[in-house]
Length: 312
Ligand SMILES: [Zn+2]
Image 1 (cartoon, rainbow, N blue to C red):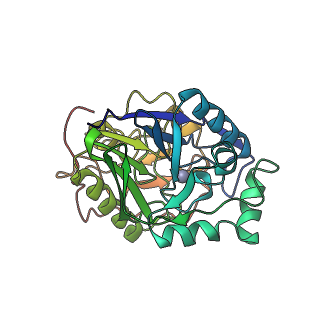
Image 2 (cartoon, rainbow, N blue to C red; image 1 turned 135 degrees about the vertical axis):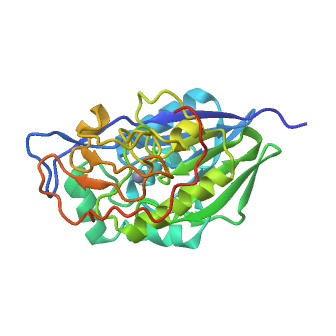
């Protein structure tokens, strides 16, 4: 008989970054806190995502050693560097663990993060902190992983923050590692988004909600987030943007989390919508400095979000 499963989350915390286009110089910019999730049986485990910097990878490896579990695989949810460049120290510490992705597109997009142009971009933000030869995941041989008798299901979902999004579904725990489809107390990455891209992202949120998880471990999570409850993560207050109120009122400033991400979406205006109660696919977005352009300010609600209702 299979033993029980457990989930433990390593959180990188926020990292300072030097700045970027349209960011207010006076506002310290940070990279969102990121997660790496250990799904464990009695002895073996699967790690989901592997953070960004070498230091983070080393801290992650040290943390894994304290758990006493043996990672058999490191699953990468999507091909963005901040979820995979930290894998090296973990692979060095646990050479029996394979770095895998469940969709060829994730493999390809991961590889594209290692081109000279992409590396130059990442190095400009994290100079001297990154592996210059990051390991790229290989395609998993199956969409299902047997962890001591428990199935872990790898699922391709669709669009999210610019790369193809896949998830790990753990039916026995009603849990999902969502990668960057959903965030927890951290805003969505809507910079450069379009109405079409937001619509596609909302469809991915719907697909996650349709699996009826009780727990969602998000790819980026505020260390102070109260929990990983799926309704709260996907629901009215925290789902799309921290600070968007269920009554749909205007939000002049979305709070502490957004000051830490003033380069992205520090200021949200949310039009009332009678059906979706303020959870709206096209928020009006401006930055505190007002410089950021390219965000569509159209706010026609084409489709309410089909997410679980409940107390936020
Ligand atoms: Zn990310």
